Length: 232
Image 1 (tube, rainbow, N blue to C red):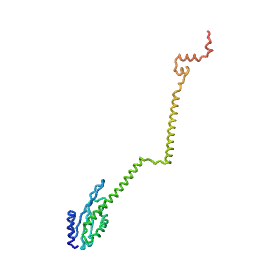
Image 2: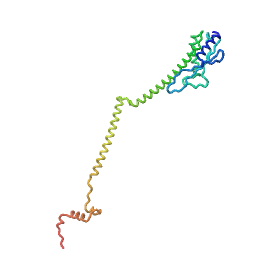
Image 3: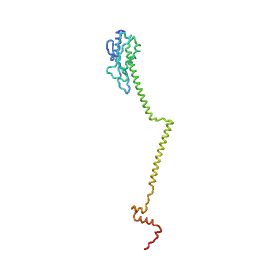
Image 4: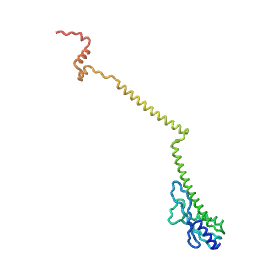
């Protein structure tokens, strides 16, 4: 294919990419490729754009075109595609298409392959990120569910629980018994009859009148002395 045939391919490409193709020189041009990327719910990024620069060598298409790949100036960085790091990988992915199309116009096929490969790369990276999130979410759910499942019961854990339960019950019963005994002692102490004082003790304490004293004195006189009469 001579220069005339190269010009025909370029003209065809201009009709397919009217706003995306930009001339650089007679045999060099750039094609802007907007990738069709779906952002996940928690992402808010504009779809990335690739710039493929094509230069025709004199023997094209019997030899491969010279290709360069870049990003638009001041383009925002996409989280799942870095042109600086991914350039070689993307260009290498075009090698099979070049080999299959040697001898015929191939730029349109190269653009299509590049777009598909870049979109697939982004999709794979998005899936990897989502897989990690799913794993973390599953771990969080498992930890949350474990709170409600409790400890798995085995013979050892049951025996340990039983001994602990019995000890707690004994402690509670001992405490109750102590409370009952203390209450009984309190009741016995309050039910004792008040101490009775003799008349003399009441008189000495100033708690009795004359009548009380005389009554008490009479009660204390021996029976034999009651019958003794005093003579003048």
